[in-house]
Image 1 (tube, rainbow, N blue to C red):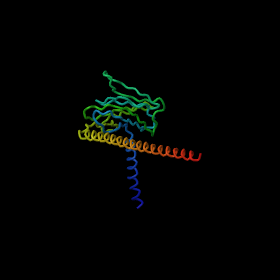
Image 2: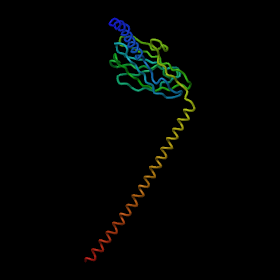
Image 3: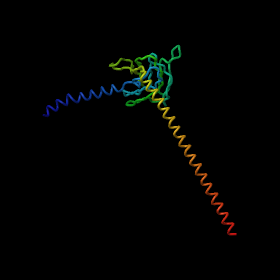
Image 4: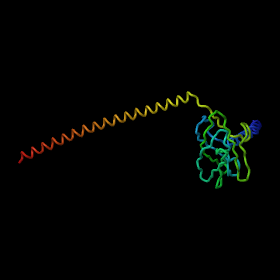
Length: 221
């Protein structure tokens, strides 16, 4: 029994360790989210840069996919932003570089930017170059299944049905808002009328009591 357990351990433990190492390496890829977006949309993308070495990452450069226009970025404390543009003024590559220690081992950093998607459906490949403090560079430019794959966003065409549903929902929300506003106005008007009527009644009672008090005072004299 002990021999069997020993044999199983010799096979099982290395397999678990290999699986753990492989999973760690797979999760250490530079990625751009979301993985799916719509044609022509102004999308907010998030670039996630993890560190898979014992050395800090100090810079990351990303090539803009064909047809994708980089519009703006969110500043990150301790990091500077720069870009390289083509003859038409469109961003070809953009870079985030640290002014401090960078992204340390076991950490990751997220960089947010806005881009305008192309009008036609396509698969946008985000080629990224990760620079380490020791001078080494990891090029995330390979295809799916490679050791260093680039992240891909599937730019899909939004169907007419989805657009109609969205418009219908928008019209419904506006109608609901209008109805709610009308109801609130009616309630407010009713409250105002009630308050006004109550004020008149109280004023009348006060005048009547004052008149009665005056008559009593005259009689006493």
